Amino acid sequence: MILDRYLMRQFLPVFAVAAAMFVMLLSLMDLFANLWRYLNYEVPFKEILRVSLYYLPQSFSYALPISLLFAAAYTLGDLYARNELTSIFASGIPFWRFSISLVVMGLMASVFAFYFGDRVVVPTLRIKNDLQRLYLHQQRTENNSDIVIKARNGEVIYQVDYYDSATDTLNGISIVEQTSGGSFIALVRAPQGTWTGEYWKLSNAMIYQWEDGLLRVRPLEDPVDYRERPDTFRRNAMAAEDLPVREAGLLVRDLKAAGLPFIGAQAEYYHRYSFSTVSLVIMILSISMGGRFRKNVMLMSLLTSLGSAVVFYVAEMITMMMAKLGYIPPIMGAWFPVLVFIILGILMVRSAKT
Image 1 (cartoon, rainbow, N blue to C red):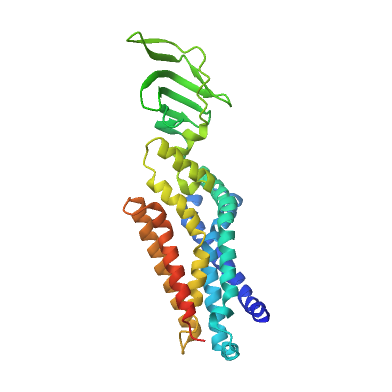
Image 2: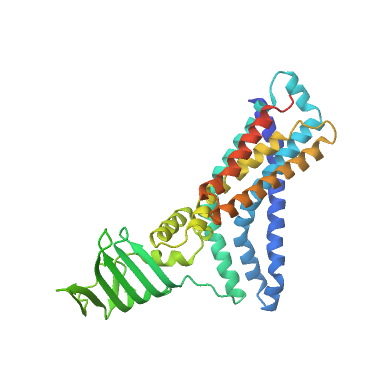
C-alpha cells in the first residue's frame, strides 16, 4: 500500500539515526565506566577499542526497543504536527490500519532480537567479558565445587568435590547407583576421573556392594559406564543469562535433576523468550499514544511513550523478581507483563482518535 511505504520512508531514517545514537551512547557509558581501570593497568588503546567493539552487539540489543519507540513516536507526532494524518483519516482510513506497518516492523524486530541475541550477543558478550577480565586482572572460571548431579532418571547420583574445566577432570568422586525405586545397588569412589571423550576414566576406583548380607569393597575393574558429559558439571557453575537458549534449557534440566534450586534459572530461561518481544510491546505502546493530544503533539507523544515504556520495564522487573523468589511461577514472571501491555496497547490503538 502506498501509505505503508510512505510511513516506512518516514520511519526508517529516524530509526537508523536513533539506533546509531543510542548504540554510541551505551558503548561510551560502558567504556567510561571502566576507563579508569584500563588506565590503571595501562591497557593499550587498541585493546580497549577491541573490547568496545565486542560490546557493540549488546549495545544494539539494548538500543533496539528504545530506538523503535523514539522513531515511532517521532514519526507519528511529526505527521500529526503537519496535519498529514488529518487527510488520511478524512479518507476513511482508521488509525489502527494506518499504523499496522509499524506493528509488523515491531514483530519483525522481536524475531530478529531473539536470534540476534542468541547467536551474536551471547558469544560476543562472553568474549568481551573474558577480554575485560584478562586486561583488568580479574578471575573467572567455569570450575565448580561441591557438585551433586542426578543422572539416568535418578538411578545414578554423582557427588564431586571439585570439577576442573581446563582439563575436564573430576576430583573426589562418589557415585551412588540405585534402582528406580531408590534401593541401593553400589557405591563407587575414586580420587579422580578424567574425561576421555566418551566416558569418565576413574583412577583407583573402588566399588562397595552388599554381598551375602555384608558390605564388601573391591577395585572397580572396568569403569566405563559413566558417560555423563562434562557440560553437565560445567553448566552448574554458570548463569542462565550467560548461555544460549538451548544450553540455558539444559542448565534448568540439570539443576532439576540434581535437586538443586532451579527457579531463578528457569525464570531467566523464560525471560530470554519474553524479553525478545519487548520491541513489539514498545512499538504498540508508542503507537497507542499517537493522536491523543491536541497541543505539543510531538513532545507529548515522546514523553507518554517513554513513560509507558518505563512502566512496562518496572512491571517486568518486579514480576521477574517475584518469580525468582518463588512467589509466582517463573513463566508468569516472564510473560505476564508482556501479555498485559500488549492487550492494553491494542485496546488503546483501537480507541485512538481517527
